[in-house]
Length: 305
Ligand code: HEM
Image (cartoon, rainbow, N blue to C red):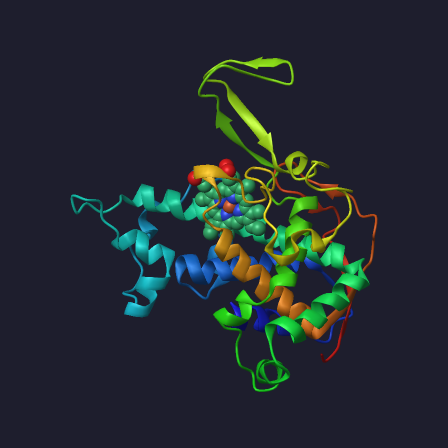
């Protein structure tokens, strides 16, 4: 993830004064998805997939991949799907594989891009938080020596580095609390119940929303304020009160993947750039997945930390 993120920043950011954060985030997350879900380094190929209409796919293309090295078999989602069998030794059909691949692509591509984009928006307008992330790199992630290894000797982030990025993750939690990449999800009522004076009969479909849940002032005082200190010292909230990834048995299975991709992005962007949001009042559009109307243009300036 780190090498792909670095390559893309080199290509799309270096030497530029202004870029559109949302288009960049989508290109990056598509490349990551291409690599980790399909085992391909060709984002062009993935860009041709019908991501908006998950029902359609090229039926014949599914099993035509070349044989992967053992390493890939363990790490690539697509390879898992092809090799997996049920208890009776039966493989999945092509339609099942294609459905599952498109499912994770749809669920895991623009959600991650949205979290990255709104990180750029909020932190671009909060120099105090930007400065704290930079300080945290020194304090929590790495010794100066580790930073030097990452920066000058071209080493890549490893698992331990990511585990230490606690402050950056708290910032992302706040970004997703204020602008959830997924606004809500459905459940079915298992029994009749009454809520706020309304009776919901058994069997009804219910749409619960992330944003209203995550802005309950009982648990999040001054809820509109971006305040990463809410999560200081690993503070946990009661179950079902903080739900950017949902909760219960249906909770997002892509949370850890998203965490790795987003923190790798945060590390690279803060380490190498300062930025300013061009239109601070830019309208947010979209229903299920929010996006900035003009693609969030930002003015960027490289620096060495
Ligand atoms: C910042 C990124 C992401 C956010 C905010 C997010 C959020 C969510 C939410 C709120 C749900 C509904 C959970 C529920 O009903 O309780 C969900 C479900 C799901 N997500 Fe994510 N997601 C993200 C990234 C991903 C990624 C990267 C993948 C795949 C690699 C993924 C795959 C899925 C799938 C398959 C479901 C359906 C789970 C089920 O119904 O059993 N998501 N996600």
